[in-house]
Amino acid sequence: MTISSSHLVLLPTYNTGPRLLAVVTEVLQHWQPVLVVVDGSTDGSERPLLDLARQEPALSVLVLPMNSGKGSAVLAGAQAALDRGFSHALVMDADGQHPAGSIREFMAASQRQPAALVLGRPVFPPNVPAVRLHGRKLSVGLVHLELLGAVVADPLFGFRVYPLAPLLAVLGPRHGGRRYDFDTEAAVRLGWAGAPLLNLAAPVRYFSRAEGGVSHFHYLRDNVSLVWMHTRLLAELLFFRWPALLRHHREWRHQAAALAFLLLCLPPGHAAAPDGLVNAAHRIEPTAATWSLLALAFASQPDITADFSERRQFPFRKEPVELTGEVRVSATRGLSLRYLVPEARTVILDAQGVLVREPAGQKAAPADPRAGAANEALLRILRLDLVTLQRDFELYGEHDGAAWTLVMLPRTAALQRNVGRITVDGEAVTIRRIEIRRTPTQSIEILIAPPRPARAFTAAELKQYFR
Image 1: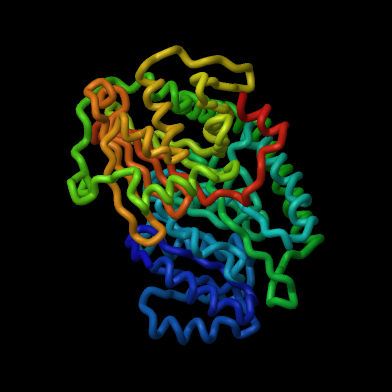
Image 2: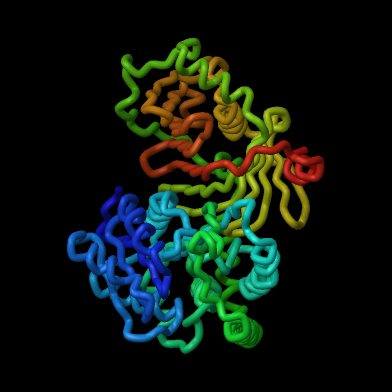
């Protein structure tokens, strides 16, 4: 459980029923504090919550006198949180469909880039109704049009971390965005305001009515509201929003460069100071049972697809550059990074080198030993080929249950200049974080979400994402 003085969890609720108390209890085990906004409920579901709040100081309950809609409840909670000194809130549904286990990951992304709107990219379960999957495609397409690009993965998914002051600035003075149109309008208007938009994968649980699932979607009223919202947004975009949005896109494009090009740009520097694992007690021998079994498990891994976020720190920039996308790993084809934010491009790393695919075409990266050394190391790391890595790096690490950390220090001065120290964090046979650090102010950090269900890449995927 994590306690924060800047980020809280905000749950709007209306007649959620008996699930509410269980969901709030689960959330408190992952993050504190928690603010629940009761939007004029009439089913009494708030009463056990108020009893819990009297015993649990990390829980606050704000009861609104009448039902005004999800957006109104979130904005009321956002203002209350801001008044209490909080800067950000993770908003999630109170019925248990959103993943409490992902709260810390989303909060960490927000803490790394406070100006960003961190959006959930839903990973739906097999039992989700088909109408939910296909019915949202129109809204997704319209938002891509309103933001002039696919910078929001799913505008209807409400599991998000909002910067509170910008959220209240773009929606507070308006009449719209008060009911089910809130999630979509908030994402579009924050994008128009220039907030970076980060998309992270989040699993979704679906509960039928028999299991206690609750939906207050009013088919006619809320669909009319959504149609009117998109009409307003498209009209605003057409008449006066597009110049500022194009400027934001240009800024995002200037920040977005492929991993290989970033490595080409990094000048030589002094390595960061070694951490506490770099000592004789944590020296790794690839033939040791624990590490050799882990490497063997990696060698038999199937094709992998996962969402990732990338953070690039430069000595000449005050704020880091943030990118998000999808990573694909094939034991035979190599690595493919499909960047989605701030612009679409695919970077392929394999035995032939680096290939960059953009909407306008594809091109090979210029030959450079610095990028080549880093890319080769990255391919070996994703296969956890410790035997080969040990030829070029001193290996240090530790295990803590299923979690493990690997620290790699270059053996030669040339490799130190070209790559620097590499740290890898993993859980079982999943790599969750890779950091390539040249100096204390010069680094690349890649955070990888849990992989999607394993399956072999199709021929179309191999053609699109590899070569």
